[in-house]
Image (cartoon, rainbow, N blue to C red; front, side, top):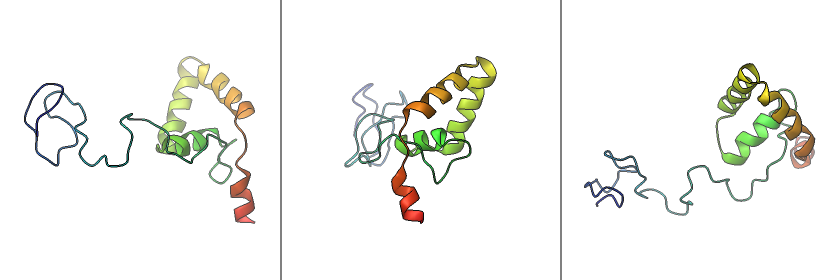
Length: 107
């Protein structure tokens, strides 16, 4: 198999080209080509079950299938560096709907 970007030969099981880093599509059956595409069927809402303050970071992490710790660290870095993270967190807290399905399932 050859990379469609740079033409370098790659193995059939390689997920990325070793030369240019472009994805080869191996192991991507049923997935979209966007690297951070939301998982179908997971709405962007507050994750009440895994919340620390309001569930914003947990909801974003669940929606994009990211690690919740990394999302929390990114918000904290945004707060410490520019203060923009706090404004974004408050806006998301107000705008994002609650996930009441988790609350009902736990009861």
